[in-house]
Image (cartoon, rainbow, N blue to C red; front, side):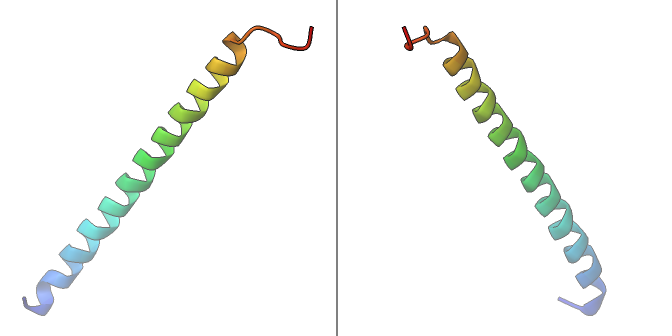
Length: 47
């Protein structure tokens, strides 16, 4: 691979990293929302 492709490879890698982080954040938010929904739907156990 010649030197002219290093910029392209770096841009693709950076873009993939950003997309991966965004997907991870969306997954994490969905997990937190589901946990919050489950906690709110539970009956109050304090008596």
